Image 1 (cartoon, rainbow, N blue to C red):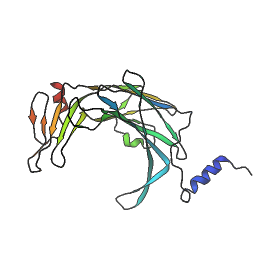
Image 2 (cartoon, rainbow, N blue to C red):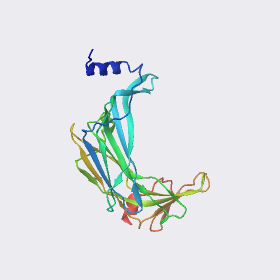
Image 3 (tube, rainbow, N blue to C red):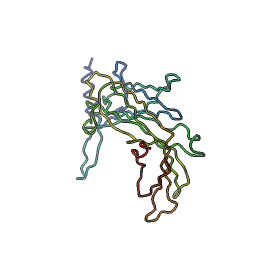
Image 4 (tube, rainbow, N blue to C red):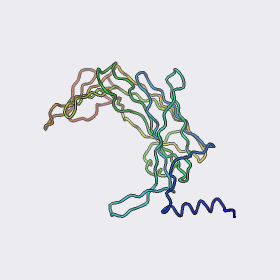
Length: 253
């Protein structure tokens, strides 16, 4: 006896409570793609692309304040390593919009950026700190209401922000020095409106100005009135409770 494939799919989904669904991604070959290009300045490297997929089929439980369990949009994250195209310092990756699988995963957001690849040129015996970059959401993806406040940009989209080195010295709980990058916003967010079968091209061309190094030094004692000391490139020192350097101040120097 032959069975209609749609009937079998309906049976599978209706028995999801008894049979564990395979919730893995399975992007079809006939996909549309989000093409991402990142320029990694000297001494930096791209971080893996965080691809957020969502599903209205494979929902998840959430306990809310009324102590009731509600079904909310299912999510799955896939990390993709960027590939260096040539000696230009440009890295590329293609992210499938359709994640496929039983859950019919759909791409809702990508997050990517750069971080230091080495620190010895600015910090001796230091460690690599946090990354900087951007998130780009796609307005027709499941769960897109979460991105309602993201500014809308055109497709293709190119962004070229500037970042500065930040050396952070920790003394209280541990003795360690990190070299990070910081910008006006370390991870800014945008949104692109795409049609159902439309791809996108995103180009991220960050600049790193290593002529302006900022230092943050943690106090050695945890007591009232003890704050980080922030030393700006011109030698100015502040210690008023800021948890991040003043980007505009550094840029104006």
